[in-house]
Length: 414
Image: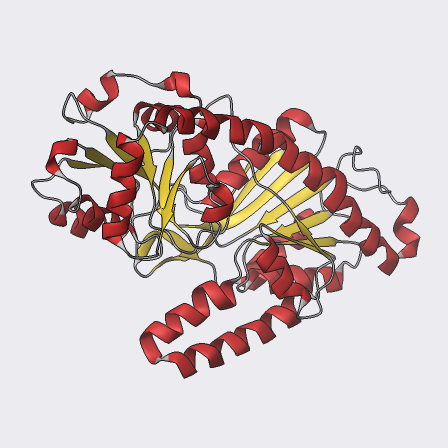
């Protein structure tokens, strides 16, 4: 087994980063940074899209932004189309391990770097089965079933060619792992993500929170935290709210930003729904979740559901849809799931949870559920202690002479 207790230089490489848009990968990058700096001797290089080329070195953490244009329709995100610049950063810092967290463009920057520096270990986080969840569904909706299947087939071909180049791959659920293995990619493990149990707790509840938002003093509060865009189906939540009976006295808070936010604010005019925007402060987000009564999400393609775990850690039952990762995150007794896009059914589930006798038991069970199964410490202990060593061992088979060579460090090799 490779000893990863020695200092390594680890690189995170992704398109899916937003300083003001939330998202599971942004949370993952932040939690990984904190874990590595506080609990390991390793150094961390994180390369992400940004408004300009910039490198900030803070001790063992190097944060490199690559100038990229905003994504059309998702202005909080950018898409880097300068692989040569990324390869220049990689060649300068020479990381021991590169973990790639997206499928487009940047994996090939890592692959070409590894071809120049064969001792580099490549790990891929296949967080979404994108040929199915993104390519097929979008193409089918815009061009029809045949086009959807064709572009899915092309995307799986790209997936096979790309991810076979990696020394190790992890997915967040079994269906994604099965999809990769069906394509002959057999170095695949499951990795469960986590939640900050110290920050997200039921005792963060603050009665003053609803008053600060101008919500009614009584009645249950529904909450959602995430992007307000088409992928997250945030518009279904407003539509669902209109189906709730007036006597329930409910209000709703949609925390986040995205291209649908202006339209949703207009659609919710006259309803007790507020849009406080993206919340970057994790303690303030934890206070908001704990101060609500029910978490709601209409997302059908949830890949893991970190936001759901944070809500559960805060003691909230969940009402969502029976699709994607949601059934795994919300087993029986922790909430209710209904059909995708059936806003009337979702409203009925909201009423059932809020007026049912099991609401208190659901809240307690939700907290116990995440305490027993999910923590960032367990996530990164497995990543650094099991998955990375396997990738490093495979990388060293390419260069037997490097077995006795030192690894790690922030300066480029001579």
